[in-house]
Image 1 (tube, helix red, strand yellow):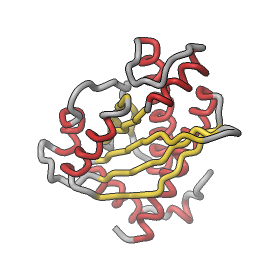
Image 2: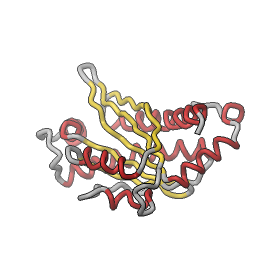
Image 3: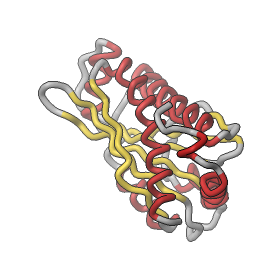
Amino acid sequence: MTELERDIIREILNIGLARAADSFAVVAQEKVLLEVPNLDIVSGRSILEKVNDLQAGHVVIQSDIRGDFNGTTLMFFSGQHVQRLSRVCLRMQTSDSVAIDDMQESLLLEISNIITGALVTQLANILKARIYGAPPAHPQGDMNAALRSLLHDNPMVQPLIFSVITQFSDKDNSVELPLMIFFDRETFEKIIGIIRTYDFMGGHQFGD
């Protein structure tokens, strides 16, 4: 993958995530910023270790991307995120804990559904692909099983990992919300193929 191709993929994601941020801001009732600072191709083993580390202190919500592409998004909600979202959206006063009840789980699932849905819609439009977001889930236990389909039961297969830094921002502070987007190797090759055969700058203006 060339630097130009990396820039194009990063810009495509930025467009999709900008729309997702707008949708998310309506729910969170705060300014939401989403940035894509890194595009990484890493071994499945190392990314599973990172996910397991994050899982220890966060509520994890998973949304699969299906159709022409095979991927998934993972959102990691800290206790502080759960507390703030519960207060704003559910009018609940809670502690900053990752121990959540059914109402809080439903809220986090809906937020993930909103973000993944907006992102998938933009990716489908820009890349001319037939893709859709599956209903989100709150996986329990080891994340290896949840990500196995992307690794094809081989932890050394190299998926494409997008590390996204999401921020809730208000007049006083901002809080980061880790978000990861995974595509398997076959999907990565499809995306690169589309980029190499489509005149993005001539046939599709970014941001339209």
